[in-house]
Image (cartoon, rainbow, N blue to C red; front, side, top):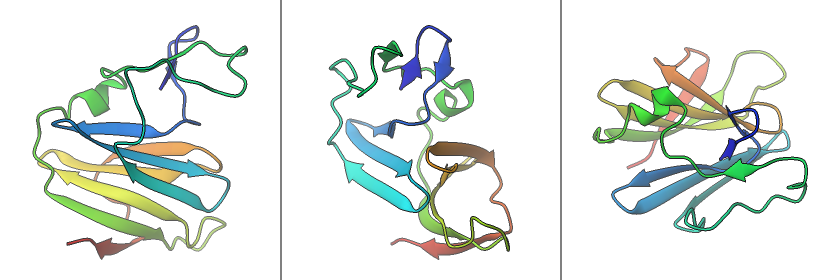
Length: 130
């Protein structure tokens, strides 16, 4: 989801990743809520946001650029990650996706989604899926 007027990512809405027509949707909210769904967000329809008068929201598949650079890469692993950094975020859960060029981590950025690219931070406990 993109906030068009300021040309920036809108972190309060789900992150939608398309894998050859199968969409993974990840959304963090509050301090400890994580929603992971498949194919439930219709990105062909205009976004609806409760305060949409304040924002002009659109779906974009080319931003942020670092995320768009993953297009076409093979997903190699999926892991649930638990933060154990000895701080207020201890116990929060993130989703880690490993691609040939590194990790995409979707984490709770205190009531919104956060994205991190590259190597996993050592404070994460890894729980591999499948």
